Length: 102
Figure: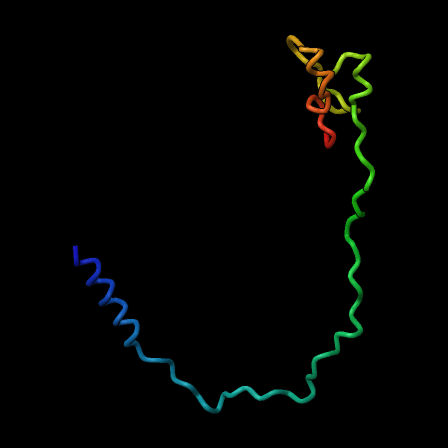
């Protein structure tokens, strides 16, 4: 039980006791006076990469299905329902059939 703990302590002690790399004082970094960073005042202004979202509300199918049969179709998306329908319940909330976001 104490063997893994002893092994971990022994390995960590060997890492801490390893010699540090030699530092060569002749290879110090000197700043080049001709290499001056440019100013950020001439940077371009941010611009949107995609068009802004429309603030228009999606149309509700609540009025449309009061006189028609509710179907899970909105525009070119959707499909016919295969099976029994609860038409009164579908007329109460037709957006569950075809959500406003398609």
